Length: 68
Image (cartoon, rainbow, N blue to C red; front, top):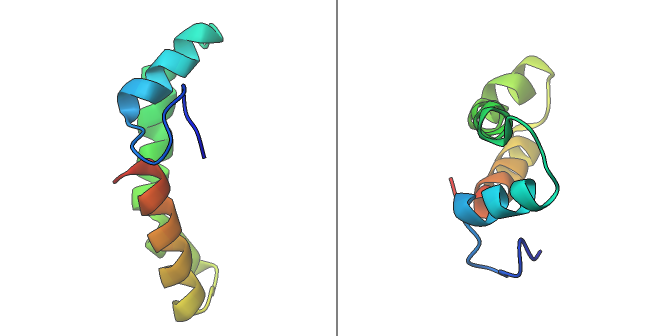
């Protein structure tokens, strides 16, 4: 995935640049809300009865994408 021209080493800075380019209001708030939801992924998935293996696989992918 490429974010604002950056491949594997994208950061919040790149996401904010992309948000600015597309005039996304309240990008910082949106970013933090999404980040918080991702950090709570395991809790949400467990409540939804997602298998442990699937929870862990998705968590690894989410964390690698957003560099959490």
